[in-house]
Each structure stands twice: as structure tokens, then as C-alpha cells.
Length: 177
Image (cartoon, rainbow, N blue to C red; front, side, top):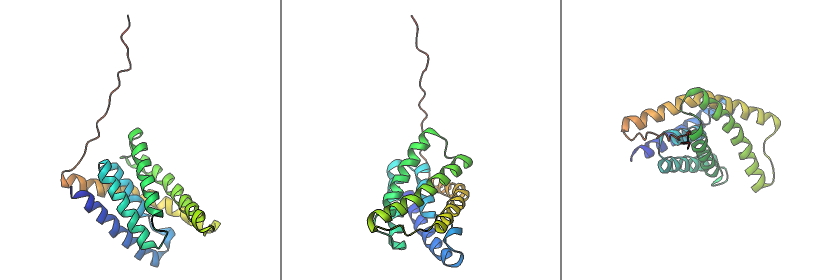
């Protein structure tokens, strides 16, 4: 049961690293670890443990970034649910599907963040140039996603709390009379 706490701690440390690197390199060149850790938790932890990790990382991102309290937490919970739903239909544990999924979610996350800010503050603080920077950030996050998911997978397997997903086989042939 310690694994979710370790993954949440990894997420908070990654957010701190992200903030430090953003000062030196600029936000567009840094992967969105606040997005990647909850997605990896959705793939490799159970539903309750992953939900707790997504909420903890979202709340830490809200606190560290100065955004509206609960804004990123809400988005991380939605992204967690989307990952669980899409992951039940597609094999997001492989690199290519995960990369494509994170690219799509990263772009949607940037637009949703801007939309929530506009909803609550009445203005969209992003220009067209900044939106292009967010697309670059989503692409970089997509490229880093398999490494982050692999790190979370190794943490879960090392702790011995791996939950194998059970495949449900449906019999498609009906007996005929």
C-alpha cells in the first residue's frame, strides 16, 4: 500500500524539478510531469490508488503554480478517468499508443486549462504564440511519457503490488438449434 505514496512523492518531486527547469529553459521545453505521473498511475496502479495519486499531484500542481485552487486537480481527475477508459479499450502500456494518447490529452489539457481560466476569471490569458508553445510542450510530454510510465511500472513491480488486468473473454458463438 506504500506504492501510491511513493508515486505521489515522485510526482511532487517531478513538479519541483519542472518548476526549476522552467526558469532556465522556458516552459515550452519542459515535459508536463503533472500530467504524465497521473496518466502513468492510471495505467499501473489500481483505480483507488491511482485516483489518490492523481488528486495529490493535481493539488500539488495547484499549490506550486498559483493557479486557481482545484483547477489542475479537477483536470487531473478527468484525465485519470479518460486514461482508465481508453486504457480498457486500447493497450496504452505500449510506447506508441501511449505517446499518441498523451499528445492528444496534452493538447486537450492546455485548452481545458485556458477554458477554465476564462470561465472563472473572464479572460483568456493565452495568445496564439503561447498556444503554439503549449503544443510544443504537449509533443515533448508525449515523447517523455513512455519513460515516466516505465519508471512508475518499475516502482509498482518492485514493491510487489502489481495488479494484473484480467481479460474478459466473450463467447461470440451461440449454440444453434
